[in-house]
Image 1 (cartoon, rainbow, N blue to C red):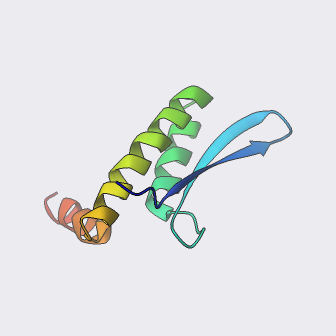
Image 2: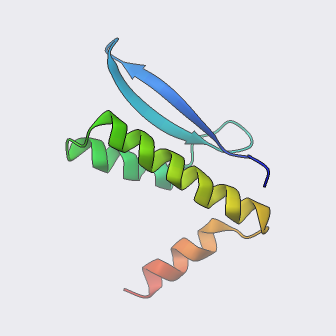
Length: 81
C-alpha cells in the first residue's frame, strides 16, 4: 500500500510536540486536526497524540488506496446520530 498522507511533527513553545496529518497536497486534514486538538485539550500525552495521528494516517491511506472519499463516511456517521 502506498503512503499518501504524511504525519508532520510541530513544536510549540519550543518544547511541546503536536502532530498534524497532511494530505497528498501537504494540507492538514481538518477532521483529524480538530480531533487531535480535542485530545490535546483533554490533556492527553504527546505520545498519545502521535499514536492517534499515525493510526488515522493508516485509516486515510487505506481510503485513498481503495479510492473512497472519507467525507462520505463522515457524513454517514453524522446522519446516523
